Image 1 (cartoon, rainbow, N blue to C red):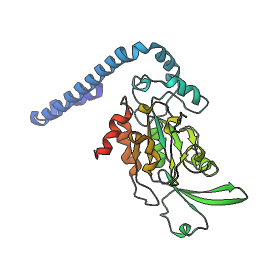
Image 2 (image 1 turned 180 degrees about the horizontal axis):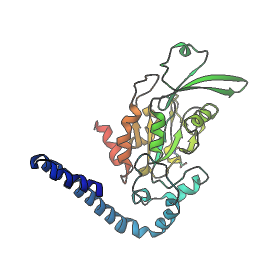
Image 3 (image 1 turned 90 degrees about the vertical axis):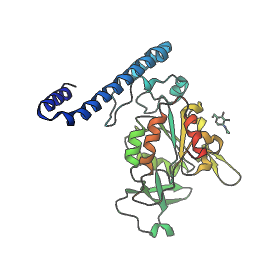
Amino acid sequence: MPTLTATLTSNTTNTTIPSIKPRKRKLVTSYVCHYLSLVYEFVYTFFIIKPKQHLLSRRRMHALTPTHSSIPALPATQSTTPSTQSSTRQRHSKGTLQYYKGKTLVLDLDETLVHSVRLGSQEANYPVNPCIKRKQIEVQSEKQSLLYQVYKRPHVDFFLKTISQWYKVVIFTASMSEYADPVIDWLDEDQTMVSHRYFRQSCISREDGNYLKNITMAEPDLAKVCLIDNSPVAYDLFKDNGIPISSWIESPNDESLLDLLPLLDALRFTSDVRSILRLQQFGL
Ligand SMILES: *[C@@H]1O[C@H](CO)[C@@H](O)[C@H](O)[C@H]1NC(C)=O
């Protein structure tokens, strides 16, 4: 703040008055906004969080854990949105979750975060842009071992790093664990971002061959969970919790993951994610 004021006063002395006026107004506006957000936070803290004292004291323990953020951390008051988390936290307490987060984001794996081809298959012959990160993964299935080339969707590393500071991140895939486990290990190298994994055996297999995902396994309170999946049938049982994304195969210019960040940033502050996501069905 002192530097800002200093700039302003030195400018006032050097420049002509007309050019200063809009800047000053801008500065005043930003102060007012800042002030209002502080008032909001105050009201929120004392009238909504305070009554939940027992939750608050539990949070303090977690507040001591350092956060690694290049991205602005969410305000402490928000991260403690009152919830039914005690049961969820207990279930996942052995995970690597570092601090308390109010909402859960469930992610599909194939064609949402990565794309894989089996080496030896015809698809493996198509050239893929060299700037796309890739890794070979060996999968033991029954008697034979299969080699897969796995490609990372553009920006997936940044995406995961960002959302894991906002949400509890869970991966729910219709693939077998023999394949998906090493892929997730590659995406989450330090094992700090993904707090739970669900594989094919957790999916509900429908007669038409589609796999549906029961996201209540990840978070029983549907107000606090969303699922990003390139296949809308995956959230057929929970349409109001689904966030669609285009299927990714190999385009190096794909920015779908980045495009979701503003929505995900906003959703973490809503009391019920369905109130926003429901609007998508009306094309909003
Ligand atoms: C989804 O999972 C929950 C909790 O594990 C279970 O109670 C519920 O019956 C499941 N729903 C379906 C449709 O399988």
